[in-house]
Length: 495
Image (cartoon, rainbow, N blue to C red; front, top):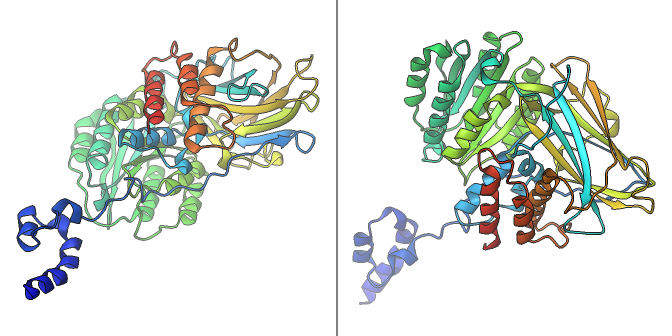
């Protein structure tokens, strides 16, 4: 008996370590009386435990007597929102540092007017009561990129850069990515071109630049992709850019579309080195779209950084529905109609005591950079809308004649050109229950984001408030994304 107890004591640590690899029958044979399920190593409390995010330090209120000018680069990404949805569908709330409220806002298309004349963007704005602090007000600023029908888009030169490393060997990663690329291929114009580069431990040009009219060849190459090995992403990114340059189309959409979980572990792996690389190729007219997949080792930090600096966008693909959104319903966003887009807001000191930009924490710029055309900023795709919210504390003369704020905007139609200025005076002052639909919807999105972050600025915001405000915007909901948000807020409320 003592010998048996000794053997069991000696074997227990080993079998506990490998319990997940043992059959239940083998475990019961060697360790009777010990629960197989209880002996399994504990899984992380959240499946996103290994995901990497940059810390978000929320923008504070700034007194206008100290500084009445606020400047930032636009953010056209939507990854943070889709990641939140993935987390809720897996049964938990997202990490606060994954919640970028500007991306929640810009995941949605707003009902903004099209540009007029020669401009490729239009701007607008309005003021309403702040739902979570009735003593404050909200300013909504809107930007709309010119819509272009799919059959009128400039010729595209796409390089599909596909991560086929071992970490992509999961149903919600490479198989989902392959499906999306096949879907996109079916939607391309015949004169568009596609190259495919894959990377794991090595980098391979799987398909040389091929006309989309030969879609069978492109889809055959996509469908035979499989995952294994380590991740030499930096080397692959360089090859993809060089492939894009080799097939560059003057006046076209020259773009690398990268699909990965961001887990680079071979070769160039530092975010700083990758940022330097993408900035160099961005200056040569190559855009970048990064599509993130999966959770557990998602390097969100790296992917957001390189897309920001690579004249690109960052999307997160969590489902077939998101594939359709990115690659079908909103494919025109791959075509930039405004480059290096910047916002500068000048607040009237007599009517605004202080202000806070909601979100855009990593897009804030120095005020002097607004008119400096050498400073990089964000891109806006065809038909895309950009929304920003300021929460303001009214001053004594609020509501009297004169502007509350001046909304200045600069953009370039093409990279390297001189920027074009636009300006809009924000004057109207209405209560939130009288405000336009899009202000109510934006307020609901922002309230929800602040609740997920447990923001110190959330005031009296509740999930029910967010649900009601979002519900005001359901009349403009072509694909049902807004009504889906209502359901996600209800799920989050119960977590």
